[in-house]
Amino acid sequence: MLRRINDALPGLVRGIVLYGVLVQLAGVWFVSEKISYSIGLWCGIVIACWLAINIAQVIRDAVDLQYFEKANRKIITKSVFRYIVVVVLFIILGYFKLGNLFMAFIGVLGLKVSAYTQPIRTKIINRLLGRNDASAKEENSENLDKEVTS
Image (tube, rainbow, N blue to C red; front, side):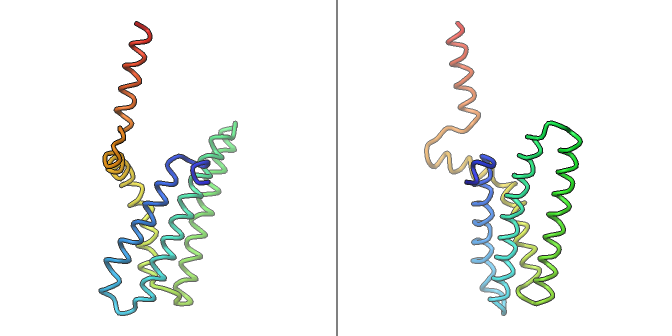
């Protein structure tokens, strides 16, 4: 389903969840309130996944729009809406003390960490599976084009 929105989205969401698992395993041993730590972290991870999916949908919809003004307005409106939702969820989390607010923020940072590490993770996975990376595929494609035209 996520691949229909954007080819990179499934990898991005997997990276966010992997980040959440690593932060959970690394930090839960050092805090006194383990439940609050975990709830805050996983609320942040869920928010980060939602943000990734929402951003991908907005980009796809904006590209499909024919008029620049409508696309620009739609991007701005959805971005503001996204930030309002995140702030409201953080306020609810903090006000009702449902989880650790700092860990929720750390969870949301999983979106950034996953986005920055996705090319590295893809390259490592491709090497482990014996696949060529994209640059090698492009080079092979260019060589094939030269052979066909010669």
